[in-house]
Amino acid sequence: MSGSAMASYAACAGKYQLEITCPPSESGAAAIMGNRIHQYMQDPMSIILTDEEQEIADRCQVEYEEIREAIALGDPDSTTLEKRLWYGDIWSGQIDRIDHFGEETALVVDWKTGRVGTGNTAAENLQLRSYAVLVKKNLPKLKRILVAIVQPMAAKFTIAEYNENDLIQADEQIQSIVNAALAPNAPRSPSPDACKYCRAKSICPEAAGVVSQMDNVKAEIVPKLTDEQLGDYLEKIDILEPLFEAFREEAKRRLLDGHQIVGRKLTSGRTSRSVESVHDLVPLLADHLNTDDILACCKVSLPQLEKTFAAKTEMASKDAKIALEKAIAEVLVSKTSAPIMVRAK
Image (cartoon, rainbow, N blue to C red):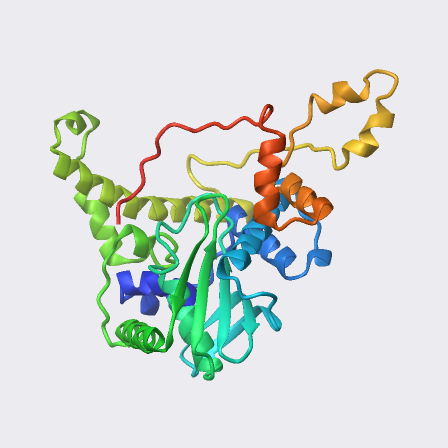
């Protein structure tokens, strides 16, 4: 069992036992990008990121530095990166970063690189709670564990603190979730949180039952629904969307393997182009464009600019961000998109 899935086990106790009957799922594009960024955060020299990946990694680093400033513990004595810790031989978690401050204090950091946030704070997050339990289990001398979610593309970082009593209560809660998931005939309870990343959603009878509840639903009835009915249908749709995506991914896999799927075919993927270095580009176009012409076509990565500004000025990242915003205020553009509907917890 994995600590990263603890929230989904809490939402659907039967998920774990049904999932282990399924083969491992192939990683999607977002997961592959996340793995690449995690590799970079572990060892920057081991991989060359795309511009988009580099921007996310830079934002993660900036927020991590802000977390360090916020907790005010100074430099860690040591750091552990991407290490899998075990609770006995039953469940485990691979923790992105653990900073050690003496024998009694640690900071656990989890990178979330997607554009959809966790929807909760570090204090509410069961994955981070399970990680705190794992770290305490493996380092029993710890008396204080801070945990932080860094999700720069979705929300501001949050931090939570566990003292010794908190860790005892967290251990009891996580073990209760694990025991429920391992119980014979653990019940399955379809929900958006439980089904979103579940490998077994395409064979889950309970998820199929939600499909049957949507039979004969016509678009023309939507304006006539009460607020309560509309919310109920939206909840069912949130459950079904991962199921539908599982069908699409399986069809794509089979088409790539040469199968014939009625009504479906593969087309060429989208090709993207980019210039790796503006500095190298300028002399290549010198006969046609001057530097100002080229710079007018470039987009500035603010996280990278903040990082460079902080390094050059030797300021703390938080102070550098404030100073930079003040310096470029006349050209800094801030845009807010249209309101986004999210699930209310």
